[in-house]
Image 1 (cartoon, rainbow, N blue to C red):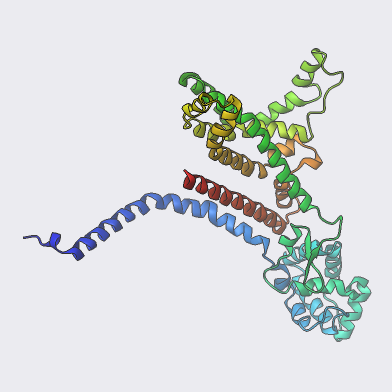
Image 2 (cartoon, rainbow, N blue to C red; image 1 turned 120 degrees about the horizontal axis):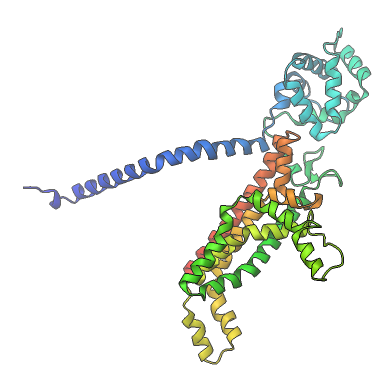
Length: 411
């Protein structure tokens, strides 16, 4: 006789074993995809973002110099042993790629440091009788080696991690006392660029909402067959490359393009309107590309709102507009929040559209991430800017989750 049913402990063990088997099957199903995403997506991005604080150039190339500067107060000229250690380190690094990386890293903090390092490297090794002689030869070679500011940069980079890139991405820096201060005016403009990025994204979001809300509302009032046809027309741009759409807007917006030609033929303008390579052209193209991301969340929410609520408010004496604004619109807040945050999050990372349709003052932060990655090869700054943009995106996503959670709780 089976006594399993009479034993609660056996039942619990059997349930746990069944749950473990189901969990194991689920892990086997999602495991390959999880490993693929981890290897192709998560690990490379995490490794890249660590560059925002990675600082190996000085400690790897100038170890003896850092040791000689460990007790230096950072004010007066360093001791003679520091000059002797610098000559030794530069001699060791003269024929290695580390010398170029060191020069580039130090040049980020003081313009001209790169030329100073390479000028000094060309004269290595120096024949110095003692530490005092090494000081004399280096200061004779270039007077900048007698200035404490150049040595402070070396001394301040004695750790494998640095806040330099993240602070520089926010127009900040560390002063001589280690306090965070604003960077000198004219040396950086990333706060302005971040502000421009968020303002442009906000404008695109608001315009997309203003166009997408009535469009989604109109679609919900169409018969199902016609609504499906309109949705297909909205989704058609997804089947076309972004570059092709941008090229089409170049044809439409240029001075002799179709829009200016049509307006001129109608007698509405006497000279072509400046629609290309400015902020207006960027807004037009970005709204066109991102409008479906606004319409689809709005439509999915509006479709679930019973039209009888609005009719009931009108039958009770409410004005049609008041019934729409006070009864219908509040029920579409989840769609407004989802569509707006989706469009805004995508917009802040835009690169191709502003680069091809905008001017020099219309570039967003992604342009400078690409600039530091491809042109100046400053991976630290590119990673820092990307990290700040990622954090802003995650905060917006958390905001969306919080708003959507409250909406669900209220419902």
